[in-house]
Amino acid sequence: MKTSHEFSDFIYWAMFFLIPGILAGYTLFKASPRLLMIYLGVAALCFVLLYYRFFCTKCPHYHNSEGGCKCMFIWGLPKVFKPSNEPYRPYELLLAIGGILIIVAFPVYWLLAYPILLVVYLLAFVVFGLTMLRYECPHCIHSNCPSRMNYVQRIEIEG
Image (cartoon, rainbow, N blue to C red; front, side, top):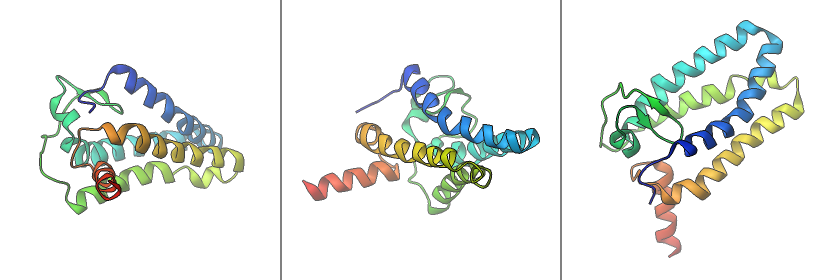
């Protein structure tokens, strides 16, 4: 089990997210620099107010890290929300997933003008999901995470 993350984990995933981030930023900037600024603001709000608040606060990595949060996706961000050990409520998952979907879906309209960039953008998220499910979820200590729970249930069913 992976009980803590190292800064190198954060760097790895940050580099991973730079692929779709650069593609989205490029297409939005080509359309309008102001549009890129709007997107960055919307993405920051969705991530912090929805994902960080409703998903991360229930994660052991949020609870256990000293000072700021030390997670594979967030490093050093202050823990401004109260940690919780309760299971996720359906509305919390909807808000957290909704925030991520807004971040991912926002640039798609502008990426349609560059089909090859759209394909790479979408493939980056597919590879991200597959990498998470293959290399992170099986070793994660976050027992309330829906991905981890699905993984554990599959193992129990498959033997």
